[in-house]
Length: 121
View 1: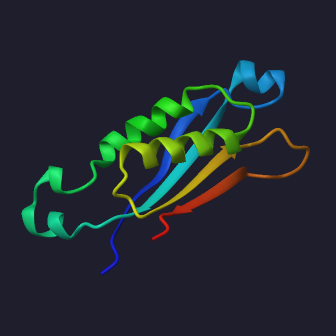
View 2 (view 1 turned 180 degrees about the horizontal axis):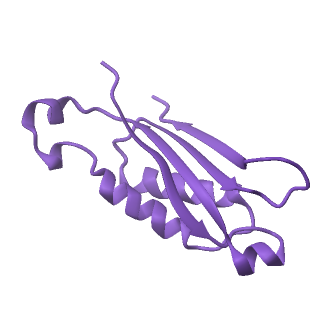
């Protein structure tokens, strides 16, 4: 059986970007995270220590979103590394980080980066 935990469309306000207005004014961001992990013990035990506490993962993401970066790629990389280091039992991580209303001359809702990390056996 494959099992996943997914946190969808977590909303943050942060000051990432290259332009001075982005650094000063900030912008809204969405983060969606999907982790592949063994949830078989949690299915039986109904006990928080037998799973990955997604509230703790949220706090890691929140912490990294509060650290300024010029590139959303860099922010996403920091988030992915922090999750991987704190929860080595995770088998796969897919992270999508989106900047809403990016400073582009044109009609665009968001600019996103998607990172996927998979444990190699």
